[in-house]
Length: 269
Image (tube, rainbow, N blue to C red; front, side, top):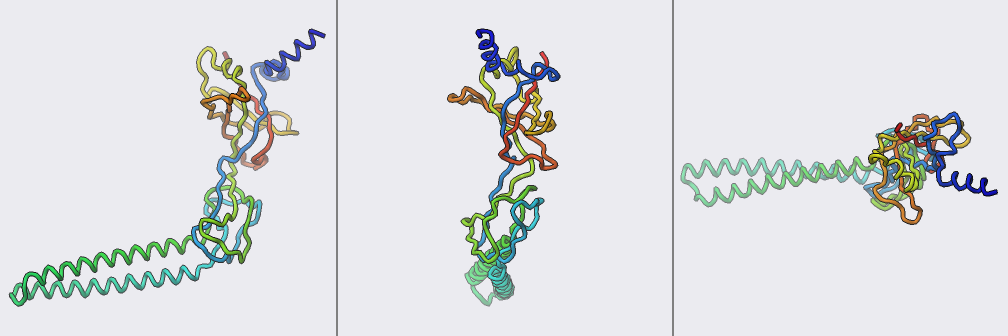
């Protein structure tokens, strides 16, 4: 009975001792979790009624794919008005420049006082500034109009779709959907005692450790991953350190939130 108890204790304290016979004896298995490398919440930058919804929950999208369109008409009118103000400002500047040229001619003929030239130069400078303001407003109106078309910021798939055509979308407030990146990450917790063993005889770096992933009911660790992060501090309550790395997922077999088994293989001693 004591022998069985000692074997069970050893298996708990040293999980690498229970690896299959056909695997390297240094391999250590941990329970891990998959996570999306990038999760982006889509919100509109303008307010208006949703006129076209181009995607559904679960759809795959690439960067730049149209997601939805908001009523463009109010913003097209704003752009037309801004462009008209640019033309008015240009005309006023042309008139001011003609007056300045005329004042300079009259001053040479000593038909007017010097102060009048200074006044006209100031008016021309003001006209130039007003044109700059009008052009800036037109650029802003054009940019705002472009915001009525929402496109995918990354390659991924649509999740948690929250809007439908005809809904009123409020700028910065209405949560439309989430785009989850196709690339995944995997994280798992390593006991501090195991980490200390890995640090002998010299501190270990993430790139020195190989990891692979399998999910139930897969046989074998068929998903190679790349460890890139070892947390700089331990979790006091669990006595573990978080390890994480990138997990290529080209065929989208894995999804975020899955429970997986991660095999960690230390470098040869």
